[in-house]
Length: 396
Image 1 (cartoon, helix red, strand yellow):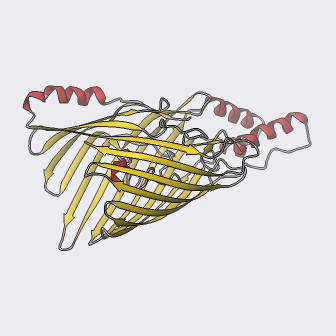
Image 2 (cartoon, rainbow, N blue to C red):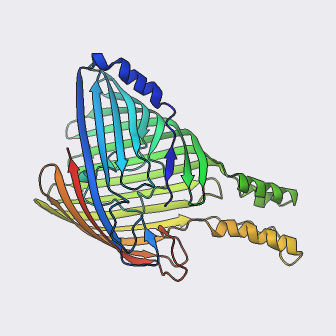
Image 3 (cartoon, rainbow, N blue to C red):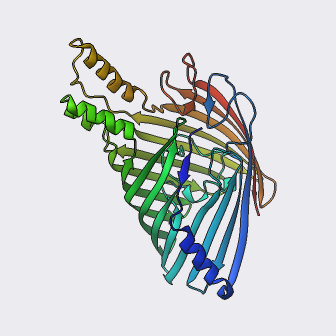
């Protein structure tokens, strides 16, 4: 399974700060969460999110520990550590940041922070906070990195009958992506975003926009682009550029009156580079609460945006050019095409104020010939399967 590897360039600085203030801490709060999730995919032709035709608890099970330490009424330190059951996921420090509240309405955070791409980004690892065993794959798919090094400023306003906030953040990310054949290093610089939220009665609205300069470090691709340039195929060479901006737009809405809820989210990822596929995805979910149980139904869909290769390398002129064309177009043929529709029926049972049991059945319908978020799909696999998940969520 592919996974991202994080580089904690700032961690020693914050750990040193935490150590130096240990004796001055006014209050230290320790909390935690754990997930035990078992899953089964009813086909031998592929894997989905790490699940195959045998039952497994590895892909999604984890345990987390969070420490919140107040230095004074205005400054606090937060550290979160997560241990994953899946060996292909990095365990260790997830959050490590300093919070400063100079005003009642203003909060400033700096350090390693959760990247706030989605409505549920802050609680994605805390399954107790949402109805599903797993948030819809089409949106919460791992296309985007979970953390970043930088700063976050949040200004909030509480009015009569509503409250609102504006969040501005920026920083960078450095890591590597394991594509199954080795680690591909990449960096995201000039990363910045803005988030607006409004809560009115039982409604919550969220709109956000992000942008970052991405640099994929793939020497073999750069070398091949150089060969194309030598042959005079400059447009084809330019299409293999792996440096450029990526824009992300997101909209979310939640209605919850404690008896029933409706949730919807839409995300659009648009890269400037031809070599990186874009993705438009979303979901609509509705549920009914009859304490202590909740039933919910979710429809989710994703549509990839794949660029076509340039048509400037002639065919039938010379065997060398035919081979060059085949290699060039083959690069585009290997791009991820994650078309997927899904319908998920789930149930949650709140055993206590800190323990919930969940069960889900998802009908997956991908597009033949596409990846559709499956891994290792057989050539004759029609991208249709059923995913069954059982989970226990615990906060402590």
